[in-house]
Image 1 (cartoon, rainbow, N blue to C red):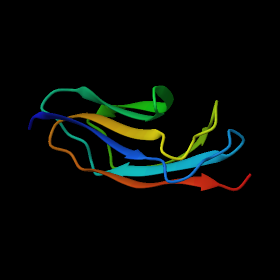
Image 2: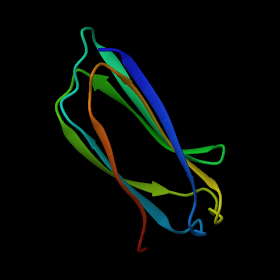
Image 3: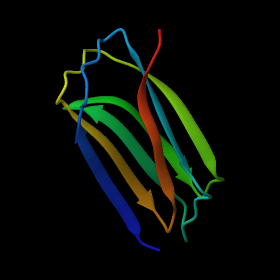
Image 4: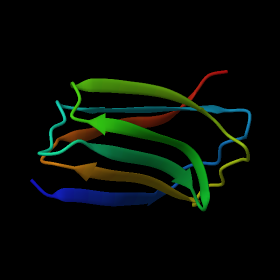
Length: 102
């Protein structure tokens, strides 16, 4: 019943050209909080935000399967960040972040 936030980081394991699309897959169980609130999810590489979403709380369980276009290439070793700011006692899962075929 408290507000949680976390940022996870990992160096990129490969270089990715800017023509490549990324697939981000994550989900949450039903979202609840004593008062209406919002969750904020951000995916970024180095200092470039590539994708973000705000989700209303309360909310039903949901799965998100997002396709992300790159503005510049990712170099092996670049810092990849996944940030989540949540309100309430809720469960979130990061499934995959992967390259997709064009």
